[in-house]
Length: 160
Image 1: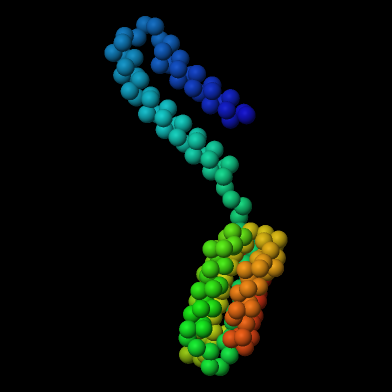
Image 2: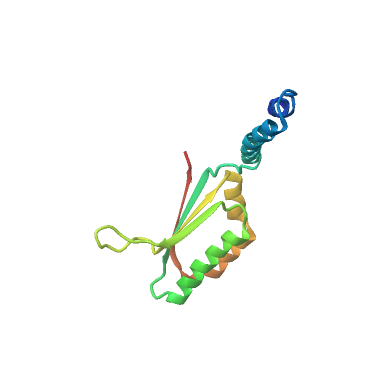
């Protein structure tokens, strides 16, 4: 409310400058108006952008979940591709996931990595992580793909 009052005082001040000087000629008033109107418009725009940014800023993401999969020997490339697409679809289906990325893993010094693929998820709260874990969509993904997995590693962390 205080910001609104300050903006009203500023607006009234501009109004008095523009229309309060009775000794100014019409040409002087027009000239002053041409200079002050863009400044007023820019000020109003800046105020609205700050107000919009403060009111509609989503909460910062705070939790990360990394899920690594090692596929069984002989798992087809199509099955791995389906696994990746199915997991990526979870991002589209679940608004709890703030960010998602995935890819194949690689080892150090030309060695083979222990896991084949990794999914990197970001959530805002621990409750959203739990909701994701218990969701029917994730359970359906697990059921559809678990026959191809040899090992699964899950790492949860907090963003600082």
